[in-house]
Amino acid sequence: METLILTVFLIGYFFMAIEHVIEVNKAAISLITGILCWTIYIILYHEHHQVVEHLLHHIGEISGILFFLLGAMTIVEIIDAHSGFEIITNRIKFKNKRTLLISVSLLSFFLSALLDNLTTAIVMVTLLRKLLSDANDRKIFLGMVIIASNAGGAWSPIGDVTTTMLWIGEQLTSETVIFRVFIPALICLLVPLFLLSFRIRGEISKNSFSEYSHHAASPKETRYVLFMSMAILVFVPLFKTITHLPPYMGMLLGLSVLWIITDVMHKRKQEEEKSYFSVSYAIRKTDVPSILFFLGILLSISALQSTGQLHSLAMFLHKNLPNENLIVLSIGLLSALVDNVPMVAGAMGMYDLATFPTDHTFWTFLAYSAGTGGSSLIIGSAAGVAVMGMEKISFGWYLKNIALYALIGFFSGAGVYLLQMWLVS
Image (cartoon, rainbow, N blue to C red):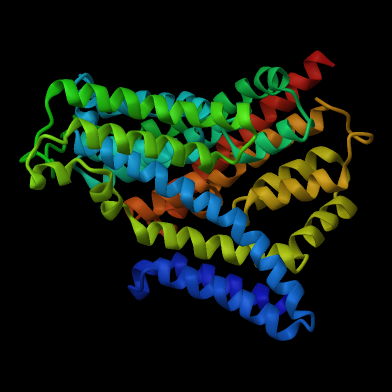
Protein backbone atom coordinates (compact mmCIF):
# COMPACT_ATOMS: atom_id res chain seq x y z
CA MET A 1 0.00 0.00 0.00
CA GLU A 2 2.70 2.47 1.04
CA THR A 3 4.69 1.79 -2.13
CA LEU A 4 1.62 2.32 -4.33
CA ILE A 5 0.74 5.63 -2.64
CA LEU A 6 4.32 6.83 -2.96
CA THR A 7 4.34 5.83 -6.65
CA VAL A 8 1.13 7.79 -7.32
CA PHE A 9 2.60 10.76 -5.44
CA LEU A 10 5.80 10.74 -7.53
CA ILE A 11 3.92 10.27 -10.82
CA GLY A 12 1.64 13.19 -9.91
CA TYR A 13 4.61 15.40 -9.12
CA PHE A 14 6.21 14.44 -12.43
CA PHE A 15 3.15 15.49 -14.43
CA MET A 16 2.88 18.72 -12.45
CA ALA A 17 6.52 19.39 -13.37
CA ILE A 18 5.82 18.99 -17.11
CA GLU A 19 2.54 20.95 -17.09
CA HIS A 20 3.80 23.17 -19.91
CA VAL A 21 4.43 20.10 -22.08
CA ILE A 22 1.15 18.21 -21.55
CA GLU A 23 -0.87 21.47 -21.33
CA VAL A 24 -3.05 20.22 -18.49
CA ASN A 25 -3.58 22.58 -15.55
CA LYS A 26 -1.47 21.55 -12.57
CA ALA A 27 -4.41 22.13 -10.23
CA ALA A 28 -6.28 19.23 -11.87
CA ILE A 29 -3.22 16.96 -11.63
CA SER A 30 -2.64 17.99 -8.02
CA LEU A 31 -6.24 17.23 -7.02
CA ILE A 32 -6.25 13.84 -8.78
CA THR A 33 -2.97 12.92 -7.10
CA GLY A 34 -4.17 13.88 -3.63
CA ILE A 35 -7.53 12.13 -3.91
CA LEU A 36 -6.01 8.97 -5.47
CA CYS A 37 -3.52 8.71 -2.58
CA TRP A 38 -6.35 8.74 -0.04
CA THR A 39 -8.50 6.42 -2.18
CA ILE A 40 -5.73 3.82 -2.27
CA TYR A 41 -5.22 4.25 1.47
CA ILE A 42 -8.86 3.57 2.40
CA ILE A 43 -9.30 0.69 -0.08
CA LEU A 44 -6.20 -1.22 0.98
CA TYR A 45 -6.34 -0.46 4.72
CA HIS A 46 -8.87 -2.57 6.62
CA GLU A 47 -9.66 0.04 9.33
CA HIS A 48 -11.79 2.37 7.19
CA HIS A 49 -13.01 4.47 10.09
CA GLN A 50 -9.41 5.16 11.11
CA VAL A 51 -8.58 6.40 7.61
CA VAL A 52 -11.57 8.73 7.72
CA GLU A 53 -10.44 10.05 11.12
CA HIS A 54 -6.97 10.71 9.72
CA LEU A 55 -8.48 12.50 6.71
CA LEU A 56 -10.73 14.66 8.88
CA HIS A 57 -7.77 15.58 11.07
CA HIS A 58 -5.71 16.67 8.08
CA ILE A 59 -8.63 18.44 6.41
CA GLY A 60 -8.89 20.60 9.52
CA GLU A 61 -5.26 21.67 9.16
CA ILE A 62 -5.45 22.01 5.37
CA SER A 63 -8.61 24.10 5.46
CA GLY A 64 -6.89 26.50 7.85
CA ILE A 65 -4.11 27.04 5.29
CA LEU A 66 -6.61 27.47 2.45
CA PHE A 67 -8.77 29.95 4.39
CA PHE A 68 -5.61 31.88 5.27
CA LEU A 69 -4.60 31.90 1.60
CA LEU A 70 -8.09 32.99 0.49
CA GLY A 71 -8.17 35.80 3.05
CA ALA A 72 -4.70 37.09 2.15
CA MET A 73 -5.40 36.98 -1.60
CA THR A 74 -8.70 38.82 -1.12
CA ILE A 75 -7.07 41.58 0.94
CA VAL A 76 -4.42 42.00 -1.76
CA GLU A 77 -7.19 42.24 -4.39
CA ILE A 78 -8.92 44.94 -2.30
CA ILE A 79 -5.68 46.95 -2.12
CA ASP A 80 -5.28 46.55 -5.88
CA ALA A 81 -8.89 47.61 -6.56
CA HIS A 82 -8.26 50.84 -4.65
CA SER A 83 -4.95 51.39 -6.52
CA GLY A 84 -3.10 51.04 -3.23
CA PHE A 85 -0.02 49.50 -4.79
CA GLU A 86 0.39 52.57 -6.98
CA ILE A 87 1.30 54.51 -3.82
CA ILE A 88 4.26 52.14 -3.47
CA THR A 89 5.19 51.82 -7.15
CA ASN A 90 5.01 55.58 -7.74
CA ARG A 91 7.63 56.04 -5.02
CA ILE A 92 9.99 53.50 -6.57
CA LYS A 93 12.22 55.69 -8.73
CA PHE A 94 14.75 53.01 -9.67
CA LYS A 95 15.34 52.63 -13.36
CA ASN A 96 18.01 49.95 -13.07
CA LYS A 97 16.72 46.36 -12.84
CA ARG A 98 19.54 45.21 -10.57
CA THR A 99 18.81 47.95 -8.07
CA LEU A 100 15.14 46.99 -8.10
CA LEU A 101 15.99 43.30 -7.65
CA ILE A 102 18.08 44.08 -4.58
CA SER A 103 15.36 46.32 -3.13
CA VAL A 104 12.55 43.81 -3.74
CA SER A 105 14.58 40.96 -2.26
CA LEU A 106 15.46 42.86 0.93
CA LEU A 107 11.88 44.07 1.28
CA SER A 108 10.62 40.48 0.97
CA PHE A 109 13.19 39.29 3.53
CA PHE A 110 12.14 41.72 6.25
CA LEU A 111 8.44 41.76 5.38
CA SER A 112 8.35 37.96 5.68
CA ALA A 113 9.70 38.15 9.23
CA LEU A 114 6.96 40.61 10.14
CA LEU A 115 4.07 38.91 8.31
CA ASP A 116 4.98 35.42 7.08
CA ASN A 117 6.46 33.96 3.90
CA LEU A 118 3.10 33.06 2.32
CA THR A 119 1.50 36.49 2.78
CA THR A 120 4.70 38.20 1.63
CA ALA A 121 4.81 36.13 -1.56
CA ILE A 122 1.20 37.03 -2.41
CA VAL A 123 1.83 40.74 -1.83
CA MET A 124 5.03 40.74 -3.87
CA VAL A 125 3.45 38.95 -6.85
CA THR A 126 0.87 41.71 -7.11
CA LEU A 127 3.45 44.45 -6.56
CA LEU A 128 5.80 43.12 -9.25
CA ARG A 129 2.96 42.87 -11.74
CA LYS A 130 2.69 46.64 -11.36
CA LEU A 131 6.43 47.23 -11.58
CA LEU A 132 7.48 44.92 -14.42
CA SER A 133 5.76 44.39 -17.73
CA ASP A 134 8.17 41.69 -18.94
CA ALA A 135 7.01 38.23 -17.80
CA ASN A 136 10.52 36.72 -17.98
CA ASP A 137 11.93 39.45 -15.75
CA ARG A 138 9.08 38.90 -13.27
CA LYS A 139 9.93 35.20 -13.06
CA ILE A 140 13.53 35.96 -12.10
CA PHE A 141 12.40 38.54 -9.55
CA LEU A 142 9.81 36.16 -8.09
CA GLY A 143 12.39 33.40 -7.84
CA MET A 144 14.33 35.74 -5.57
CA VAL A 145 11.12 36.63 -3.72
CA ILE A 146 10.65 32.93 -2.88
CA ILE A 147 14.24 32.63 -1.60
CA ALA A 148 13.99 35.92 0.33
CA SER A 149 10.58 35.17 1.84
CA ASN A 150 11.65 31.74 3.08
CA ALA A 151 14.94 33.09 4.45
CA GLY A 152 13.19 35.99 6.16
CA GLY A 153 10.59 33.71 7.71
CA ALA A 154 13.19 31.31 9.14
CA TRP A 155 14.69 33.73 11.69
CA SER A 156 11.37 35.07 13.00
CA PRO A 157 9.13 33.14 15.43
CA ILE A 158 6.10 34.24 13.38
CA GLY A 159 7.65 34.22 9.90
CA ASP A 160 7.48 30.52 9.04
CA VAL A 161 5.17 27.79 10.29
CA THR A 162 8.03 25.46 11.27
CA THR A 163 9.82 28.15 13.29
CA THR A 164 6.48 28.92 14.94
CA MET A 165 6.03 25.20 15.75
CA LEU A 166 9.43 25.08 17.45
CA TRP A 167 8.72 28.34 19.29
CA ILE A 168 5.31 27.20 20.58
CA GLY A 169 6.72 23.76 21.47
CA GLU A 170 9.37 25.53 23.61
CA GLN A 171 12.23 24.04 21.59
CA LEU A 172 13.53 27.57 21.15
CA THR A 173 12.93 31.09 22.41
CA SER A 174 12.31 34.09 20.18
CA GLU A 175 15.50 35.90 21.24
CA THR A 176 17.72 32.91 20.50
CA VAL A 177 16.30 32.09 17.08
CA ILE A 178 16.63 35.73 15.99
CA PHE A 179 20.19 36.02 17.32
CA ARG A 180 21.44 32.73 15.84
CA VAL A 181 19.52 32.44 12.59
CA PHE A 182 19.36 36.04 11.32
CA ILE A 183 22.89 36.18 9.84
CA PRO A 184 22.76 32.69 8.23
CA ALA A 185 19.33 33.52 6.77
CA LEU A 186 20.65 36.83 5.43
CA ILE A 187 23.60 35.02 3.81
CA CYS A 188 21.12 32.51 2.35
CA LEU A 189 19.53 35.49 0.60
CA LEU A 190 22.58 37.58 -0.28
CA VAL A 191 24.62 34.85 -2.00
CA PRO A 192 21.98 33.92 -4.63
CA LEU A 193 21.02 37.59 -4.93
CA PHE A 194 24.64 38.47 -5.80
CA LEU A 195 24.86 35.62 -8.33
CA LEU A 196 21.47 36.29 -9.93
CA SER A 197 22.13 40.02 -10.22
CA PHE A 198 24.55 39.30 -13.07
CA ARG A 199 21.64 37.93 -15.14
CA ILE A 200 19.61 41.11 -14.78
CA ARG A 201 20.48 43.98 -17.10
CA GLY A 202 18.80 47.05 -18.49
CA GLU A 203 16.18 49.56 -17.48
CA ILE A 204 12.77 48.97 -15.95
CA SER A 205 9.71 49.01 -18.16
CA LYS A 206 6.79 49.51 -15.81
CA ASN A 207 3.44 47.83 -16.35
CA SER A 208 0.98 50.69 -16.43
CA PHE A 209 -2.09 48.55 -17.10
CA SER A 210 -4.74 48.84 -14.40
CA GLU A 211 -7.98 46.90 -14.51
CA TYR A 212 -9.65 49.35 -12.12
CA SER A 213 -8.63 52.59 -13.88
CA HIS A 214 -12.21 53.30 -14.98
CA HIS A 215 -13.38 53.13 -11.34
CA ALA A 216 -10.76 55.17 -9.55
CA ALA A 217 -10.86 55.52 -5.78
CA SER A 218 -10.14 58.93 -4.31
CA PRO A 219 -6.60 59.52 -2.98
CA LYS A 220 -7.98 59.55 0.57
CA GLU A 221 -9.76 56.22 0.05
CA THR A 222 -6.64 54.71 -1.51
CA ARG A 223 -4.40 55.72 1.38
CA TYR A 224 -6.91 54.60 4.00
CA VAL A 225 -7.50 51.15 2.45
CA LEU A 226 -3.76 50.56 2.00
CA PHE A 227 -3.04 51.55 5.60
CA MET A 228 -5.88 49.44 7.02
CA SER A 229 -4.97 46.42 4.87
CA MET A 230 -1.31 46.47 5.86
CA ALA A 231 -2.29 46.96 9.50
CA ILE A 232 -4.55 43.90 9.25
CA LEU A 233 -1.78 41.78 7.73
CA VAL A 234 0.59 42.82 10.53
CA PHE A 235 -2.17 42.17 13.08
CA VAL A 236 -2.57 38.50 12.06
CA PRO A 237 0.63 37.15 13.71
CA LEU A 238 -0.01 39.34 16.76
CA PHE A 239 -3.53 37.92 17.03
CA LYS A 240 -2.11 34.40 16.91
CA THR A 241 0.47 35.19 19.60
CA ILE A 242 -2.10 36.76 21.92
CA THR A 243 -5.01 34.33 21.46
CA HIS A 244 -3.17 31.13 20.40
CA LEU A 245 -5.85 30.67 17.75
CA PRO A 246 -4.74 29.50 14.27
CA PRO A 247 -3.51 32.26 11.90
CA TYR A 248 -6.49 31.90 9.54
CA MET A 249 -8.79 33.12 12.35
CA GLY A 250 -6.90 36.39 12.54
CA MET A 251 -6.85 36.67 8.74
CA LEU A 252 -10.61 36.13 8.45
CA LEU A 253 -11.24 38.56 11.31
CA GLY A 254 -9.18 41.17 9.51
CA LEU A 255 -10.95 40.48 6.22
CA SER A 256 -14.36 40.90 7.85
CA VAL A 257 -13.30 44.22 9.39
CA LEU A 258 -12.02 45.42 6.00
CA TRP A 259 -15.27 44.23 4.41
CA ILE A 260 -17.32 46.44 6.77
CA ILE A 261 -14.99 49.40 6.27
CA THR A 262 -15.16 49.27 2.45
CA ASP A 263 -18.93 48.74 2.41
CA VAL A 264 -19.45 51.80 4.62
CA MET A 265 -16.86 53.83 2.67
CA HIS A 266 -18.59 53.28 -0.69
CA LYS A 267 -22.24 53.04 0.37
CA ARG A 268 -23.21 56.35 -1.29
CA LYS A 269 -21.85 55.42 -4.71
CA GLN A 270 -23.71 53.98 -7.67
CA GLU A 271 -24.22 50.22 -7.47
CA GLU A 272 -21.93 49.39 -10.41
CA GLU A 273 -19.06 51.47 -9.08
CA LYS A 274 -19.60 50.27 -5.52
CA SER A 275 -19.38 46.63 -6.60
CA TYR A 276 -15.86 47.12 -8.03
CA PHE A 277 -14.58 48.13 -4.61
CA SER A 278 -16.42 45.46 -2.63
CA VAL A 279 -14.90 42.44 -0.92
CA SER A 280 -17.52 40.29 -2.67
CA TYR A 281 -16.08 41.27 -6.04
CA ALA A 282 -12.50 40.78 -4.81
CA ILE A 283 -13.31 37.25 -3.66
CA ARG A 284 -14.64 36.42 -7.13
CA LYS A 285 -11.35 37.67 -8.59
CA THR A 286 -9.11 35.52 -6.39
CA ASP A 287 -7.11 32.79 -8.07
CA VAL A 288 -9.18 29.73 -7.16
CA PRO A 289 -7.08 27.28 -9.27
CA SER A 290 -4.06 28.20 -7.13
CA ILE A 291 -6.03 27.41 -3.98
CA LEU A 292 -7.14 24.04 -5.43
CA PHE A 293 -3.54 23.33 -6.45
CA PHE A 294 -2.54 23.93 -2.84
CA LEU A 295 -5.32 21.61 -1.67
CA GLY A 296 -4.17 18.75 -3.89
CA ILE A 297 -0.54 19.00 -2.80
CA LEU A 298 -1.45 19.12 0.89
CA LEU A 299 -3.78 16.13 0.50
CA SER A 300 -0.98 14.11 -1.13
CA ILE A 301 1.52 14.96 1.59
CA SER A 302 -1.00 14.26 4.37
CA ALA A 303 -1.56 10.77 2.89
CA LEU A 304 2.18 10.11 3.06
CA GLN A 305 2.18 11.36 6.64
CA SER A 306 -0.82 9.26 7.71
CA THR A 307 0.64 6.07 6.24
CA GLY A 308 3.81 6.65 8.26
CA GLN A 309 6.14 7.20 5.33
CA LEU A 310 7.42 10.58 6.46
CA HIS A 311 8.06 9.25 9.97
CA SER A 312 9.90 6.27 8.46
CA LEU A 313 12.01 8.67 6.44
CA ALA A 314 12.86 10.62 9.58
CA MET A 315 13.81 7.39 11.40
CA PHE A 316 15.96 6.35 8.44
CA LEU A 317 17.87 9.60 8.67
CA HIS A 318 18.27 9.16 12.42
CA LYS A 319 19.73 5.65 12.06
CA ASN A 320 21.94 6.17 9.01
CA LEU A 321 23.44 9.63 9.31
CA PRO A 322 26.44 9.98 11.61
CA ASN A 323 25.66 13.31 13.31
CA GLU A 324 22.85 15.71 14.06
CA ASN A 325 24.00 18.42 11.63
CA LEU A 326 23.71 16.08 8.65
CA ILE A 327 20.25 15.04 9.86
CA VAL A 328 19.15 18.68 10.01
CA LEU A 329 20.59 19.47 6.58
CA SER A 330 18.84 16.41 5.13
CA ILE A 331 15.52 17.51 6.63
CA GLY A 332 16.03 20.92 5.03
CA LEU A 333 16.69 19.45 1.59
CA LEU A 334 13.84 16.94 1.87
CA SER A 335 11.45 19.77 2.75
CA ALA A 336 11.83 20.86 -0.89
CA LEU A 337 10.07 17.67 -1.97
CA VAL A 338 7.67 17.08 0.90
CA ASP A 339 6.14 19.54 3.33
CA ASN A 340 8.54 20.80 6.00
CA VAL A 341 5.84 20.70 8.69
CA PRO A 342 5.61 16.88 9.08
CA MET A 343 9.40 16.61 8.77
CA VAL A 344 9.89 19.04 11.65
CA ALA A 345 7.06 17.39 13.59
CA GLY A 346 8.85 14.05 13.14
CA ALA A 347 12.09 15.53 14.48
CA MET A 348 10.24 17.02 17.45
CA GLY A 349 8.78 13.59 18.16
CA MET A 350 12.14 11.78 17.96
CA TYR A 351 14.19 14.25 19.96
CA ASP A 352 12.56 15.50 23.15
CA LEU A 353 13.69 18.37 25.37
CA ALA A 354 15.61 15.93 27.55
CA THR A 355 17.80 15.02 24.56
CA PHE A 356 18.11 18.54 23.17
CA PRO A 357 17.00 21.18 25.72
CA THR A 358 15.42 24.51 24.83
CA ASP A 359 17.64 26.65 22.56
CA HIS A 360 19.99 23.78 21.78
CA THR A 361 21.84 24.37 18.51
CA PHE A 362 19.94 21.41 16.98
CA TRP A 363 16.64 23.30 17.20
CA THR A 364 17.88 26.63 15.86
CA PHE A 365 19.72 24.88 13.01
CA LEU A 366 16.50 22.96 12.29
CA ALA A 367 14.57 26.27 12.15
CA TYR A 368 17.06 27.56 9.57
CA SER A 369 17.18 24.39 7.46
CA ALA A 370 13.46 23.64 7.41
CA GLY A 371 12.65 27.28 6.66
CA THR A 372 15.11 27.81 3.83
CA GLY A 373 15.63 24.34 2.32
CA GLY A 374 12.27 24.40 0.56
CA SER A 375 13.45 27.19 -1.74
CA SER A 376 15.45 24.72 -3.84
CA LEU A 377 12.21 23.55 -5.52
CA ILE A 378 9.22 25.75 -6.29
CA ILE A 379 6.88 23.19 -4.70
CA GLY A 380 9.01 23.07 -1.55
CA SER A 381 7.39 25.94 0.34
CA ALA A 382 4.05 27.69 0.75
CA ALA A 383 5.56 30.82 -0.79
CA GLY A 384 6.77 28.86 -3.81
CA VAL A 385 3.46 27.10 -4.37
CA ALA A 386 1.59 30.41 -4.14
CA VAL A 387 3.90 32.09 -6.67
CA MET A 388 3.74 29.04 -8.94
CA GLY A 389 -0.03 29.19 -9.01
CA MET A 390 -0.46 32.96 -9.28
CA GLU A 391 2.25 33.69 -11.86
CA LYS A 392 2.10 30.36 -13.76
CA ILE A 393 5.79 29.57 -13.22
CA SER A 394 6.49 25.97 -14.22
CA PHE A 395 8.37 23.46 -12.08
CA GLY A 396 10.90 22.96 -14.87
CA TRP A 397 11.62 26.66 -15.36
CA TYR A 398 12.32 27.14 -11.66
CA LEU A 399 14.49 24.01 -11.54
CA LYS A 400 16.55 25.26 -14.48
CA ASN A 401 16.83 28.93 -13.55
CA ILE A 402 16.56 29.32 -9.75
CA ALA A 403 17.10 25.99 -7.96
CA LEU A 404 20.91 25.98 -8.13
CA TYR A 405 21.12 29.53 -6.76
CA ALA A 406 18.76 28.58 -3.93
CA LEU A 407 20.86 25.52 -3.08
CA ILE A 408 24.07 27.56 -3.05
CA GLY A 409 22.38 30.06 -0.74
CA PHE A 410 21.08 27.27 1.51
CA PHE A 411 24.52 25.69 1.97
CA SER A 412 26.21 29.08 2.33
CA GLY A 413 23.86 30.03 5.16
CA ALA A 414 24.28 26.61 6.76
CA GLY A 415 28.06 26.99 6.63
CA VAL A 416 27.83 30.41 8.28
CA TYR A 417 25.54 28.98 10.98
CA LEU A 418 27.98 26.16 11.80
CA LEU A 419 30.92 28.57 11.79
CA GLN A 420 29.00 30.94 14.03
CA MET A 421 28.24 28.14 16.52
CA TRP A 422 31.86 26.97 16.44
CA LEU A 423 33.14 30.47 17.22
CA VAL A 424 30.85 30.98 20.21
CA SER A 425 31.29 27.47 21.63
